[in-house]
Amino acid sequence: MAQDYRIYEIPISSILKNGKKVKYFVFLSSLENEECNRALKRIKPKIDIVEIYQICRKNFIKQ
Image (tube, rainbow, N blue to C red):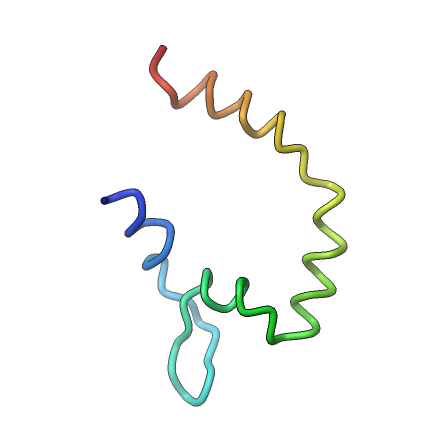
């Protein structure tokens, strides 16, 4: 599915692991980087999923 490709494959990250670029999704979901984990914990309380859904529904989802 094209949407999956855009989420999981691109954009190409500049994060390197063992000299190779790592996809953002893989990097974030691996939870291997403690500094990244701390940043995710700081930002999580600020994310309003209901507001995000409403914005998407209003602007991108055909009714």
